[in-house]
Amino acid sequence: MSVIIETSLLRKEFTVRRKAGRFRRTSTTVSAVDGVSLSVAEGEMLGYIGPNGAGKSTTLKMLTGVLTPSGGTVSVCGLTPVPQRARLARRIGVVFGQRSQLWWDLPLTESFTLLRHVYQVPAADHAARLRYCRSLLDLDSFVDTPVRQLSLGQRMRGELTAALLHGPSVLFLDEPTIGLDVLSKQAVRAFLGQVAERGDTTVVLTTHDLADIEKLCRRLVVIDHGHVVHDGTLDELHATYRSKRRIVADLDAPWPGRDLPGAAVESVEADGYRVTLTLEGATAGEVVARLAQAVPLRDLSVLEPEIEDVVARLYAGASSVGTAVPGDR
Ligand SMILES: Nc1ncnc2c1ncn2[C@@H]1O[C@H](COP(=O)(O)OP(=O)(O)OP(=O)(O)O)[C@@H](O)[C@H]1O
Image 1 (tube, rainbow, N blue to C red):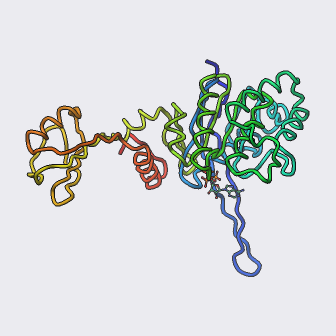
Image 2: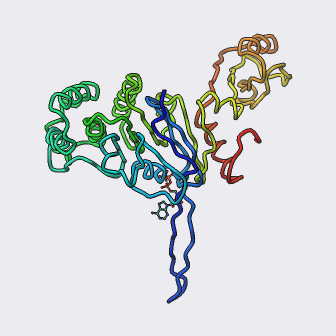
């Protein structure tokens, strides 16, 4: 697989000037992106996440040629984004939550036709891509409605179509599911899942909705204070942070307060009739068998580690040490 996005020690600093008294101004430098080195292979779907102000949007803006880096190198589709922005625009599609590429007063169909002319897409290619998006994103019921009358979910489906009509090699999505209702979220995720499966478009996705990541992205890059603090699969993230499976058991007698080999008692609730155990080295089956010997069981469930939990711990750890080294935790 060849590399389609590559950054090396990418940096962006902003100078912020503030009034300090009547005539004086002070200026401070904000380091928004501080040495990000990334390599994304063709066809990959990459989740790019981090807490507020971590540097995600600034990175995307440098990758799409909107912002000039302060240092380091960046290459997308073999092009340097800022000086080659016009050529890059033909190779990438962009959906940024705040900005629309649709014409507000026109129906979606007309925006799509205008975009065909902007990008000079051959009619047959345009028609094939539009057919694909119309059916997968279920656009038919609102494709003739002016954009300003669409719901947020409908508009987002239109935005995704608009971003794909010129057949980009890379799609940049900034918070594509933010504020969407459940059905639209599902539609957008299912569609992106299809795009990933086809494997001909590389996708970089930022989101605060970790379910997006869980459903779509095998690889996850976490950024905090401008630094990459994790780059790997979700499973690796769980392994690094030693995420544990848990067993919640409802009991027919109060918990006798015993040690169970291979598990740690996390909490005892409901007057001793509910116990939560964290698996430590033993399988769920082994622990359930030992539990059943210790006390009569009424009901139990095994909980998989929550991505929210592990990411919250990662953010907390990263923030407290500036540049986190997960292995040190
Ligand atoms: N134009 C700008 N001028 C000054 N500071 C900026 C500018 N743009 C971003 N910043 C600062 O750079 C840092 C990174 O911002 P960025 O928008 O990239 O974060 P983010 O991870 O996208 O956050 P969010 O999830 O809140 O959108 C923040 O401290 C932000 O205040």
